Length: 366
Ligand code: NAD
Ligand code: GLY
Image (cartoon, rainbow, N blue to C red; front, side):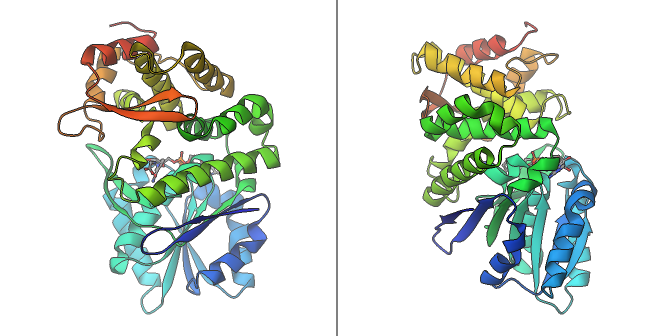
């Protein structure tokens, strides 16, 4: 088991990572002085596979826990579901002190965390992430949000959990595509900060893909450590430090938006292709060596991530990239790799270079 502490101005919290550690979950809840009444926000898929285990664990220790289910879709990050959930929680919590457990992937974590941030002006919540994306990324750092029709994550808060508890055994039931989806974020961490994590992935990919316990614990703990150190430096994403977590995300988000957030590309798949496009720009300005850019592409490919976009026009992707939240004062902003383990933020990339980069990842030409 690995314990990573996040130290923030107001308070800190622990990120716990390990295999078959669920038995210790209640001990950690007690340490954070969690309420004796708990609402577990989840979806029917996760509840069916893991629900009994959790509720038995909690009730054995005398905790009064209740599930609140939302549909298994990104659409649950909506104002409607959010308010339905708050009403249910208010009903259960009438005269009780409550803690919320976000039990699921990033959708559940973002929604339940946002609900925790606004109900009674904020109540404690715990992240119990069940996808690789959530364990290495969304459960850590306190960005919680719901979507609007015009865009994702547009209504939200920075609201830190009291605890992140990453039981890697949850990944045993995760569909392969979702595992690969999360690996794109792990590769992102390796490229932005950690060449030894990159080498580890190159040398142990088969083990990771077959969920070898030690390898999985290593990549999740290392990614969590990287994200935690970044969040500590720039909790509110204002200093340009946390922004490096967006490597691959500018074109990645544009690919997701241009394909209508359909299941054509998962977030990780789009971000993987976005990393290749960002590296194309790095190459245009001679920021990264050809061999390093090729190594990144090879690792993405070997992981099972797509390296080109099929069936979405480059013009649509180009159009969509203008709506990126990372635009500041009308200027575009890209996180560009300069080596494996090092990135820099560059503003004002010429539009011609962006168009060429988008063309380079599209099988369909303009
Ligand atoms: P998700 O929450 O939709 O989960 C993916 C799928 O896996 C779902 O169908 C879910 O039911 C299923 N699933 C989850 N755990 C399972 C398990 N253990 N076994 C079997 N099936 C399981 O997707 P995600 O990739 O985890 O999260 C995506 C969301 O996270 C998006 O809304 C995105 O905006 C958000 N996100 C937020 C942050 C942040 O910093 N807050 C960072 C990255 C992503
Ligand atoms: N997922 C990006 C961030 O937490 O800042």
